[in-house]
Length: 263
Image (cartoon, rainbow, N blue to C red; front, side):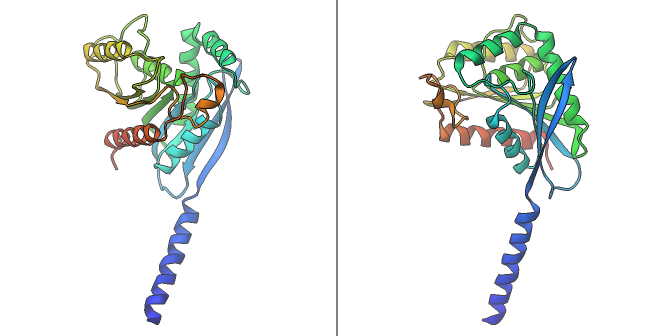
């Protein structure tokens, strides 16, 4: 009996020590694109030894907020280095839909700036000492998902992209045959009024024509913003958090990432 108790105590102590060692670490990074100061947030599990894949997190139209940072932490817990990037500029975050719309519209007027800011964040992630620069993934939310897909169309050298409630409006220039390098998973809501079924079908046809390895998963009853617990706090009926869709879409995305980045 005493031996069993002793073994149990040792096991409990070992588990506690492992949990403490597995604490996710974070740090803020200030970087620039041209003359614009940008704000990054890196998260990693310091119990994981050696270099590992890095994953960029592209924020919603609200900007680099806590939701984006939470996804970087989530990625760290899954064994990656998560880097929540910034497309607007340090400190530029919206809480009202009209402000978010204005900021998003201003940014996307110049696609070259969007790409330059993506590339600046990618360079920061690749030079992190915990990252294998040849293994890079991207997750994008709402506007950030649209940006991630556009970066794929432009031939960015990343290996996997997962998007969540991304806009799927037809691009000015559809993806060229063979241009898209990463594997793609699009997670969308069946009740997302911003992403109608026709847009989803058009995206699938574009990816098929381009020869891309892309999959779309549609979640029943999920509205726009289904991964963000604060989605319903902005006074828009079209936005709502959906815990089931959030969980299922994350699990599907991590399954895809593990297939792309085995070991």
